[in-house]
Picture (cartoon, helix red, strand yellow):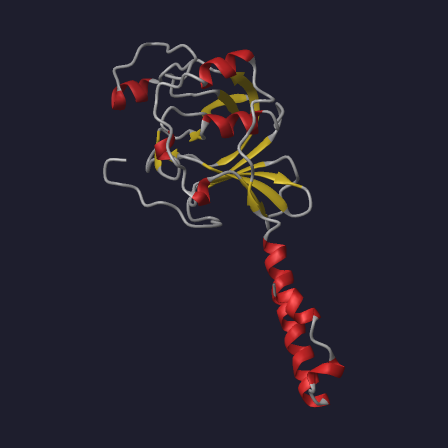
Length: 241
């Protein structure tokens, strides 16, 4: 609409003097600059929901019969491409615990950003690790601390939608040793954006499958402590979250 009007205005038919014409030209330049900035911002945006193209038959079966209710994830925690200003190499995973975001670094100053659940106070972890193992629909063996704080649980919970590990597990290792921390799916997507876990990084099952398909064993994972570096807002935690 604006373009049609602008294009129909000519110097010979408008009756404007040279001074007025110069002002109009300057205004057009400002408007075009604003439009360019807006279009540049459109380079960032929510990605289309992950398709099932990379899913196994088991994925399709289990994801079609989830035992928990689906929830509307707040817009800021939906998977999207954003500008990325840190210096990690493409392919690195960076966890911003303060803002509840996980970044998968892309080339050219961009990253895929996912909303996550992080460890509650006293259970959170930070440091540098690598993905030492990957597993689809992993089983869960509660630690002694989890049994004491949250149990009782079975000694081992088999993989599946009812398992709190969700659809995928990325096992974090440091110095060749298992840190006992994971990036994994969840059967509680309503807590994305909060700090309630026992220290592991939770993602929606759809998002963790998407991330799992992008990373390899040996991928570097940088988990930043809360307050060290934050990129955006986070949801305040409830007293019992």
